[in-house]
Length: 227
Image (cartoon, rainbow, N blue to C red; front, side, top):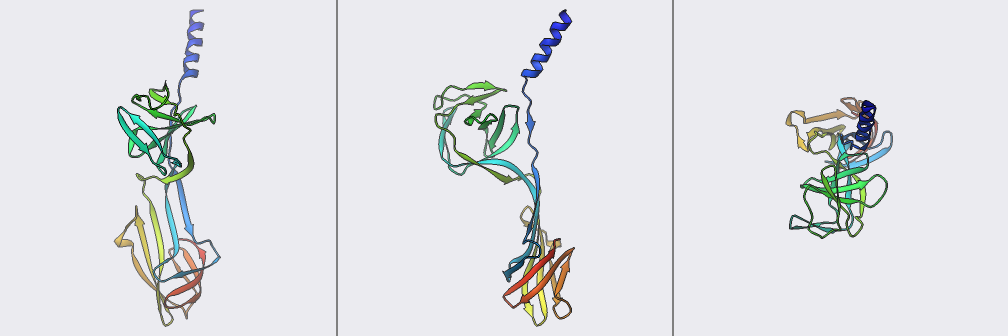
């Protein structure tokens, strides 16, 4: 009987516990322009662009609000980004990259967002409650926001660009560049030249482009295959 009571009590503790799940950034790949569409660009502008990286779900504040934490008055400006760092079974938690002491908890039941903080407030907001070691505070005004995505800064971003560099006779010139976290990789920058009288289709690293028209300043083309 005692063992049965202990088992029931253990089950209640587990069911009342908080499951905390840290968010893993999502992978993304961007290709531009679309395959087979007729595109135009000028000299010095990429014809083909590819980017790979990671993003987090985030929210963007659309109306400024105030908060005071431990006597320190703060204005959360319109446009401030809060990144989804972790979730529980009842809330999604979004934090500011510039201040980890507070953030926004969005209830999964669709109710108004709350402020969360590891320290106590001084009365700017109505009395809150404790949840999973945090102080959740009900703001006097509803927090206005929109959903968005932000690039994960601690994850590498990789870009490839194929840029038009002009025409001399039947020769078309291009520059291929690779970037990691917006920094060009010198060893992966290459000048390329193609003879248009030999073929209207050019290629590099699996990419294929059909040239429709090219002058010294602009080019018309179709991307047949990406890098």
